[in-house]
Image (cartoon, rainbow, N blue to C red):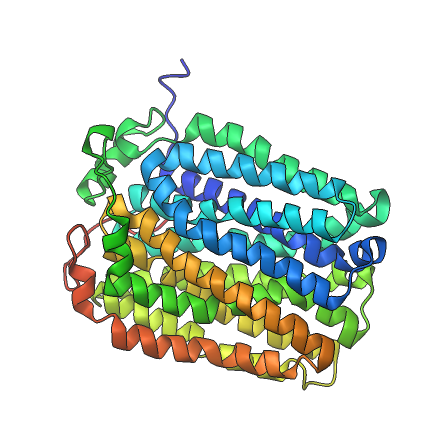
Length: 437
């Protein structure tokens, strides 16, 4: 009976599962940001200490982001995602046992080594299940989990800390990932091997040209060739410049509200989540709008780039955050910036799946993410120093300028012809797959 059960619209269920694990991923990483006031008191940490700990996280994140995509391509999407989700969930729970700066730094380093695998695995899953014009929407859906996780982290972590102590927040959020892995293991396989896939949806995916590789068709990934390619180097540079902006919001915005706007932990729990709701809107809208452009007859490259331009145009509002007179206006300006970043990312993270063959998607996504993590590590070192000795203003000015600069690089260094590599849809190719539900 169970074997004959079919799940309608399974690819959207898969996208929902990816949203949930990305939510958990970001809840895990942001829990410390929300609780840093209490943790710093107990462990006697200053801003420089926190900046160094965060940079260790991003150093590990950069190291493993470069490797995790290759690991996912070798293990496959199902096993790769389960492995990384288990590993980072255990690392998160260990935060509840720390006794000082270096044990906390060790746990953050372990979390940084394990969390990156979520993103190449999720991107690869979307590549396996979604046609080109739905792909950015699929990426947008799972990436909405990052903003949703950041939004959930503030009230959940604050509530747990206020009622049960800050250590309980790490145990609880870490356990969620282990529960998710069980459901993932039951439901996930690529379309041609998935026992839950209905005949109707299977026919739709076949008509749309969505073909997942069988184990026999797997090829050894030439990661050096991927790394040396112009598209990969461009994506590494673009993410090096633009990813640290959202990392800054995730890591430092609660601390900014405490230091500059007089918020206590209860107020952070009530209000720090607001910008990330706009991030959720941006991820879905950013994924939808590029697909809408394609259904209107635009080429895939033009659709992605114009959608990214829409997002990048909103980021300069970040400059206003430290200048406006009230905390409400500062949160509003941050919300606009997060909205723009989300529209940007829904399309930027789709580019590896658009440009590279399926067997190299995880590797390309991982290497490009490495660039963002290196940028995040360096930016957090600088941020910690600047905040300890000066003000937040230079940081917000930098945050407002990086996306427009990155957009120029995308437009100049990723011409339409790079979207025509083997295994990628041609820039002008007509697409007839069904519309998003």
